[in-house]
Image (cartoon, rainbow, N blue to C red; front, side, top):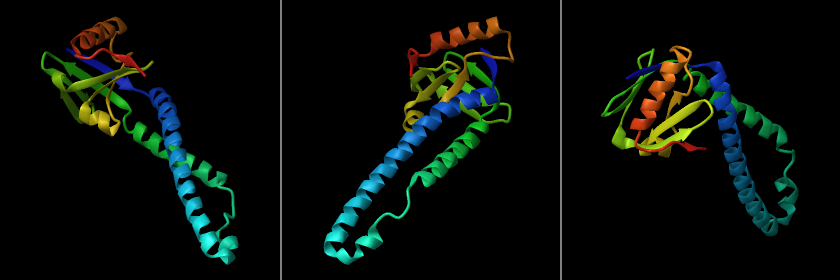
Length: 170
């Protein structure tokens, strides 16, 4: 069976909001670890060389740099997610599923490889162990503008019934 759907800019903005919050938290945690390490090194150097205390003192607040880094993270995520916009075709049978783009890119998974199925308001995210380790997934839209809604929902239910793992909310 085949299901046709498209990933729109509205989908991109929704996914961007979720990923941006996660990535900025990761970045802020990394910066906090680096600052902790720097403070430990500065304390050691201040005890060893007291006359260097002025040179080792932080000069300017880090907030402007933090805002710049957050904008750069948002830009990178937006570019990556914009690349995924377009029309897709999900084909599945007894062996597994294949997700292909109109541009020719294709991903295949056997049913035995599927380990995760996450449910979000707009997508189902299907992944195997390898994709999950990388933090990636195959995204399948929950609603389609390219097919009649009743037919698409029927096909989506058939897909979910064949998937070996139940959907989980995240």
